[in-house]
Image (tube, rainbow, N blue to C red):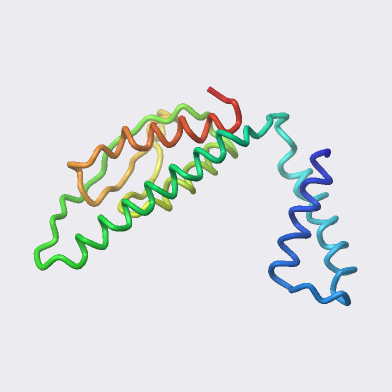
Length: 157
């Protein structure tokens, strides 16, 4: 299946999820999906990479595990009478070059409870600053491990 058709199908599925499955809305959904696919192909052309389904499953399961563990940790700290917090900012290095893939990874990594990617060093595109609730945790190594897992999804080592 080519990239345009894949995107159009993805946009149609999104349309159906948001608008519902009324048959009378389907013609509009098809037109909107085709237009969205055309615009997305112009704004973000396909990179030619292939998605590794096994690595994607590993990434999703690992992300869910990390998210659950981090969420429980944040909730434990928040509900504690004397929260054990040592907040601060750490530096981490990313291997992904600037662009869509790195932006997507940064967005996903910021979803993990207890950490937030706050910005990049202006003079070094690969140095990112990460705010964490507990500097005693291995924040930078976890970011590096998640990035490596993310990169394996696209067979990009």
